[in-house]
Each structure stands twice: as C-alpha cells, then as structure tokens.
Image (cartoon, rainbow, N blue to C red; front, side, top):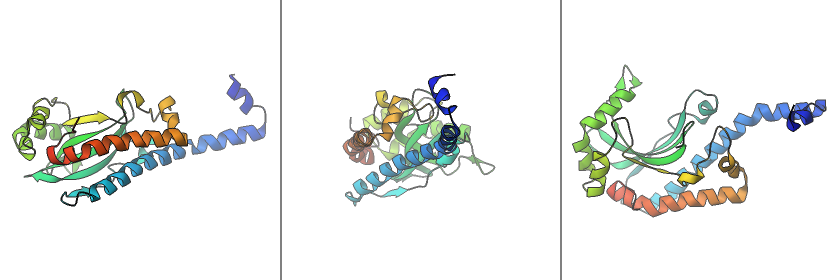
Amino acid sequence: MNATTDVIALSKENFEAAKAIAENFKEVQTKKMRELLESIRNHLIQNIKKQSNITFDFDQYVSSTEKFYLGKTDYIQLKFKLGLTYDDISLKLIFEILKKGNERFYYGVVPEFKDFFTNGKYDGTKHLNLIQQNKNALKSIFNNESWNKCIDTMPKNSFWVWKRYLPSKYEQPDFIECDDNYLKLYDSADYDQFLKKIYSELDNNMQSILEKGIPST
C-alpha cells in the first residue's frame, strides 16, 4: 500500500473521513465548475450592459454540470446568443469545457440553425452539413475579410468558426484528472488570477466579436 492508503487504514476515524471525502468529491468538483461558469456569465452581463446598442440574449446551460461528472456527457457549455442573425441562422458565443483531449477549456463562435434536429433530437451530422451548405449566408452576417477567411477555412468536421483557449493554451485545467492547473482553482489567489486572465481576454475582444464576429487579436 502507498502512504495515503496506509494512513486511511490506521483507524476507523481515518477511514470514515476518507469515505466522506470520496462521497462528496464529485459534488465539490461540480460546485467549482458551476462557480467558474457563473463568474464568466456575470462578468459578461456587466460588460455588455455598457454597450446598450448591442442585443445580447443569454441562454441556459446546454447540459448540467452534474451530468458531466457522472459520465453522462463529455462536455459542458455556457451559451450566449449574439444579436445578429441571418435567415434561420443564429450565432452563439459558447464557452465549453471538454472532458478529454488537449483542448479542455475554450470559447468561440458556433452557427446554429432552426432545422438541425432529426425526430426531435439534435443531429450533429445535419448541423455540420448545414454549416457547409450555408457558408455564403454566414459570410453575410459579418462582411469583413477576417470573418470571411474564418468561414472559408472551417474544417468540414468542425462546428466552430473560431475558438480560443481559456485562459491560455498552457493553463488548461484538466477537470477530470485534476492536474496542477486544476488544483489552482482551489487556491484563492491563483483562482482570482485565473479569472482575471479570462476577464482580460473577454474585455479585450468582446467589442470586436460583437462588431466583426472575431477577436481583435
């Protein structure tokens, strides 16, 4: 046995304490994820209020954080509806936390359509096809060279016009394996710094996203 299991096995009290921690571990992780996403949501609400000429509607979470830690979904999203639309296309600014892979926490723009359901259920293949079929319409939403380039270079297997790491490529928390970047979320000073970097990213780019569809840098 390793040192941790040795300590747990020393007494009934130690075992009961370890059992209580294990039983509440996923609940603590769920609470932290919800806190993080709600902090981003609240910051955006305050930021957008300063831009009264912009319509920005807020959606609910696509799936619950509880499902993420119970293994019932591989991602969690916080979605915002950008005010600009074209025909049946709406643009969503999405913050996504992914369970696996090198890309775990990022945000970006995804086109959504009224008709991307099959028999009442979301159809990812249909969604991808609609994006490819409506590239010219997507370009009409923001008529600038950088936006058009993003549309033209979208991979056929991607829903994202563009996406960016939060807070950076090298500070991606692993929300499942609880790596060093994730553990920093439980230190108040590190967590505050983590949020400040995200807020800075958003504050520097939101105006450009709302006006041009893409970040300014």
